[in-house]
Length: 491
Image 1 (cartoon, rainbow, N blue to C red):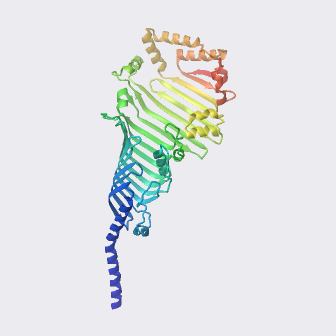
Image 2 (cartoon, rainbow, N blue to C red):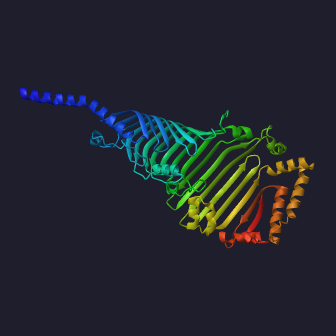
Image 3 (cartoon, one colour):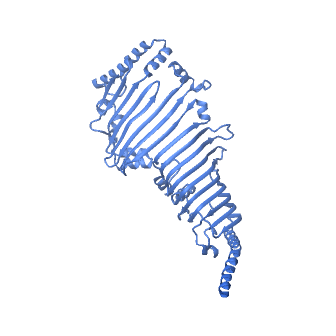
């Protein structure tokens, strides 16, 4: 029995001595890390703190010149996936921290961070950054390029996964004193450039010493954001400012709460802009884009907008209201792109809509779309199979003719008759005048006289490909036959 008590006492004493030694070991490891970090003179830190059991490393007043000028009042990572034995031996990834080194942490916090780009005169400030489930794989940060910061940043994003990210008070100041920033950004499910959801609030763009932001958006929300293709372009090291960065792959995007000096000065309002894309499979997708609540009321004190203001008043309108709604379908397997009723609606004016179908979309076409280099489309064989442009009059003609009549001193009826006659006699220079064109112009003239819905249908036979667009530049093309144009008028 006595031997048992002695053995138990020895175990307890050993544990007690070990526990008492932990703070000493932590202070020793912290001092070794500090010495290693400051060894080359490119990095300084006022204080280093280590928690061995929580695998925590805290850096206070961190300043680095290894990746431009970087500073942070506090930098703390906990749940570090770095062997405890390595820490005890003084071997730590933080002893000689370099861009491109791997980093694995359950939780990372950064306070009052500042990143300065002396070459471009831009300084980024981040009030607070918190990341859960962070895993940064090793990446190549050795880039000898004038735009190395862009390349390295893109590679870092492509190497990163995280469960949750939260940033507060983010803003950048340029060399002129102009600022750009966000109140907050949060993201879920970050996976090598793919992000499940992102919410950003209080986007502001403000000139130096401005009383209010020039432009502001209260909230932006994104779902299923895929930047992988864009990052591949940026990480290649051949990208230059102004060059395409590729098509943004986005499941859903919403922008709302527009304001700022630009909107106030020019009498603009904008409610919401949204876009969504649904994929049936890798080949087929359906997209929709909407702009809601747009209004333009030219203020009386803006001389450059005076003519537009007077025109609206002559039409009996205090402001121009418009909404836009456009849907489209892509079937890469069939090589087809369909635009389904792209509609621009003026509640007091009418509806202008467009439907179109393109066929023979080849690899050159998809590369141009995905790469964002739309000039390359002209190298593809994509062709217009059909299109329909329709204008439904809901007051546009009456208001327009009344305004024009006021300016010319004529009645609305007389103005309609005069415009209709001009349409009938219209002979555009450089076009072949045929009986079919004359019939088409007659339909347009009757629309001017009576209103209703005017539809222009194009069904080129064969489909009009990019290789045939040169015909339009030749003298006297027969547009009606080339595009298979017909016009109809309905009530």
